Image (cartoon, rainbow, N blue to C red; front, side):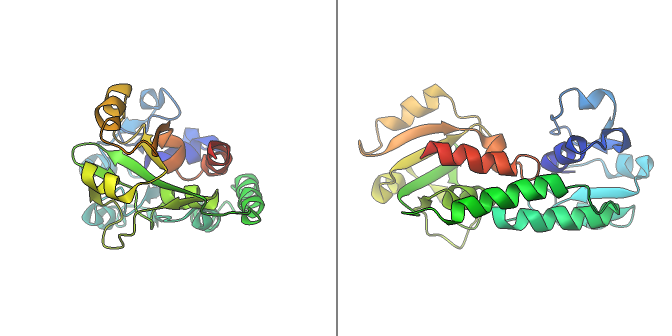
Length: 238
């Protein structure tokens, strides 16, 4: 029920055991040809899931509604984990392996990620570049400091200039961005696919000291198989 977890399961060789996924589970490509589609992450077809009779269901509270998760917990063994930090992903690997009763399944990915995290801990001048990471356009919404996305950027040496603990994805105005004066505004490729025209619409209102950069939203938000590569990618952005 979570695209990043669908991708993760396929990456470790369990594609043939997958019986259903959401319409947004687009990696690996062509998956819809071999498994049943069960609707969206927010509006799944619960009766279809029930008919598939899966032994395990992978979900998380950020992408799925609580009532749907509760319903699914009565169908099969439920895995429900929502990492809010890159540092929580190794634990997610361990807990998913335990849920699937395959203890060594994610060891290679976990080792690569923990090594990447450790290599970044010794960075000097941490928090040297302030940023705003936009995930949506109308209204403008940004990744707050308590999100998985923000944790990746912060681990690599950026600093989230938004200080709003009341919302994980706070709404912003152009005036807010002007007042905050971030050094970088990141324009994500998903969930809203920012394009060059969106950048041109905003750039005339942004301080000259602020750069606007496109960023790979899938790499930044799909936790699991992409997590280690996300850290490497962000490190190069500095």
